[in-house]
Length: 367
Image (tube, rainbow, N blue to C red):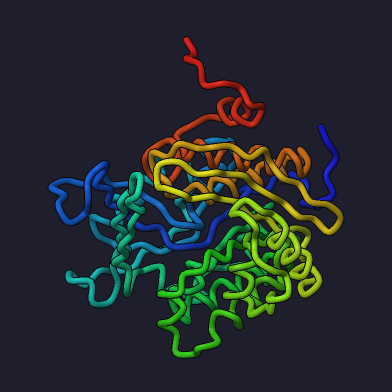
């Protein structure tokens, strides 16, 4: 096993290896068709934060749970069953009474087209007033979760933090409590302008993201998200020569670690989305001492959604297991590639398949 410099609390019988704080939505997938002409949809569960816990559990066999809220109605029960089917612990879900029409609380919905060739993927969210967007800091007993029960890793993200002033405050409270208890924290900036623009404070994105980044061990983002979310002036770094050019993102990562002393590393993906059917794809991890980059590969896409979350799950899996930083980016990039080869937000794969892709094994039929 390769030694790693990233420090994670050892497994001392904690209840969970990882918890994810965020909104879980129902995704309505028209398959190969378009939303405007669909007559039926396949339903998946998903969410930028939850997908990481799902991948850690279903692919990498870690004990994971989700911190979220659902409406007490049939849609909430459907989401719960899908979460449980993926093996993620649903015991910490908070249930909110439903008034019959969704005025006070509701299930977040996401309609997503996969795209193909020149037609880009398209996502339409219907999530206002969702149960998760109304979560407030005091609804979870952080000291019980991180201290009494025990967790090795907490993951959350900028999509959840951007949902409302309440969710932003909840994310900040969670990461601060996790740090007090020695729990490793990862945060995916995952910038969505449409969400942050709804905040009354025009500086909400910078204030919230900087407060969370200050408590993080692993930050997921590149030079674009650092500028948009953290307000960093990166104009002197120049532009990428190609979409797969690692230079500006690495330089931004180094600068972020200077601004946020608690950070142990920054992770990001490299993607060349020339068309919706095939992407150039790689992963990178910058620690305070070294850059690690996976092999670049051409990936044929069946369903792009969730590739970045799967990358994060692979990185966290390797760091939890002390496998080393190079293994982290290799397994993360392989897991992301496989996630984009299957429908739904989460990869339908196994650790053996991920390791085979990371090794560069071919795609010959296995019988």
